[in-house]
Amino acid sequence: MPAAGIHSAVEGPAAMRTPTLEALAMLRPMAEDYPTAMNTPLPRLPEIEQITREIHTLEAHAMQRAQRAIEFKVEIGKRLARAKAILPRGAFVPWAGEEFGWSRMHV
Image (cartoon, rainbow, N blue to C red; front, side, top):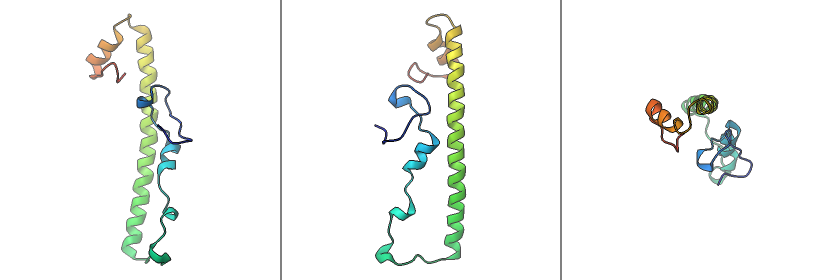
């Protein structure tokens, strides 16, 4: 069950819901949630500062790509809905299986 305040980007069965970028950000722990040992300040080592910058950059890129992936999946869903409306009754799932290797549960 999703945490309070998390809404899906796509409506549907719970197993198929995709969290929004905001929901993913809510799940990321914050540094202030973890006190340092005996409240001692952390050392300011140049290598650690470089690693920290790299991690922040990589995390930002990952979050942007996650949001973009969600947008792509929404567009795919729109096109699947159009295809289902066009195809004869009972042809949609076989078409999706043949074209994309997807099962009924996937589409």
